[in-house]
Amino acid sequence: MGELPNAVVKRLLVKHGGGLRVSGDAIDKAAAAAEDYVARLAREAQAAAEADQRKTIMENDIDRARAVLLAEGATEI
Image 1 (cartoon, helix red, strand yellow):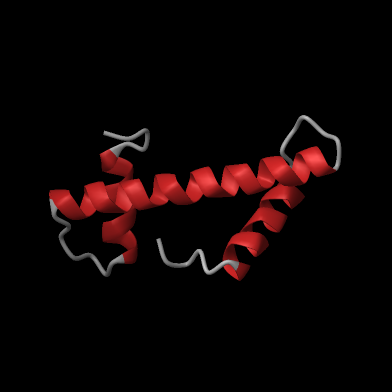
Image 2 (cartoon, rainbow, N blue to C red):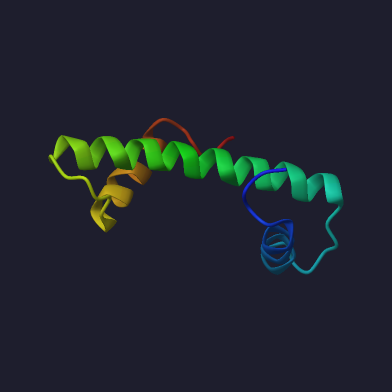
């Protein structure tokens, strides 16, 4: 089991999935995918912060990290 609570993932899937029911396996798979994306986002944001010689990840680091991941085709996990 990952770090994201399944209840949160399920709520988001139902909310953005047109109210359809969601299987347990689908919740697990979505949680794993979300955690993977956040981990990659964090690594890219860390690199951006360190490139600016900071020890704090700022909002613009997240923006830069998202741009890098999108350029790399991170829409598919």
